[in-house]
Image (cartoon, rainbow, N blue to C red; front, side, top):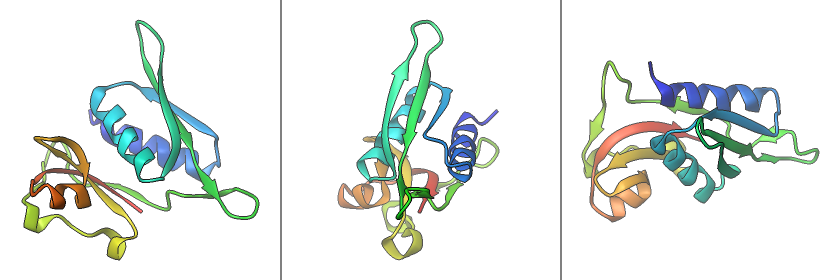
Length: 130
């Protein structure tokens, strides 16, 4: 079971329905992906709730005159449990000519493609967001 793909699907579905927030089961990697999305301005905020069974609550961000156009236009899972995709620093893709981001899991933690290029480190290409 691919929990990261489940989180990305929940974000995609919540965006289509213009929901304010989405709740997914917590894991450290999903919290790090949410941190990167917040730093890059794709989501408004995120928080962890619960004691025993923790949830990751992601507050979505919208734009436009009525505030109904989602900031996340597309989100795509790249590396999957059945086929892991690893990239070197020279192979990190530029998403939508720099308008989107690639999210990587590196030895230095979860980073954007731009940060990984600056730190000269490669890793597992988790997803692309634009």
